[in-house]
Length: 181
Image 1: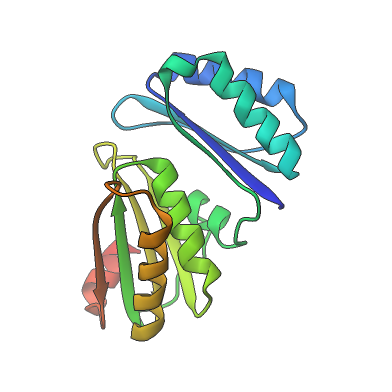
Image 2: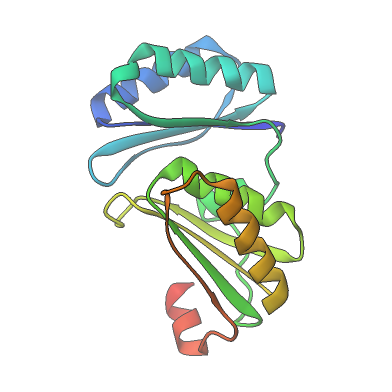
């Protein structure tokens, strides 16, 4: 995958219609198309950079008044899509846990990508606003210093005001690890 694009709309019906237009406009692969809290809709596509840019532009132009946010990442880390789609392999509890909470879906994707690109951490999950009151969540694990550095990169990659909170927990209790994953 070369690029990843995402658009988030205020409404579900318009989001579905705009996603249809997006897919018809460019040769991209649909990664995700789903309602998120509170009553919004998110579509995500992958493909060649130019095609993804065109698709996102088409979706935004379809109904710009109802677009909450959009993004195009030209080169996305390979662990981002599995973290978004719930297909990451989650190891048994070990190392530290990094938690990044954001106000927006695009911010979580940017944070997860930036954290993973530094290496030495495993991106476990990027949860986009489902059951989170519109917030999003990034979870990653590794050695304490690596997780601290990754969280720092993630915060630096996100616009001011979109980070709700961050935590680095050096050794998460096994019972909590099992409940989270």
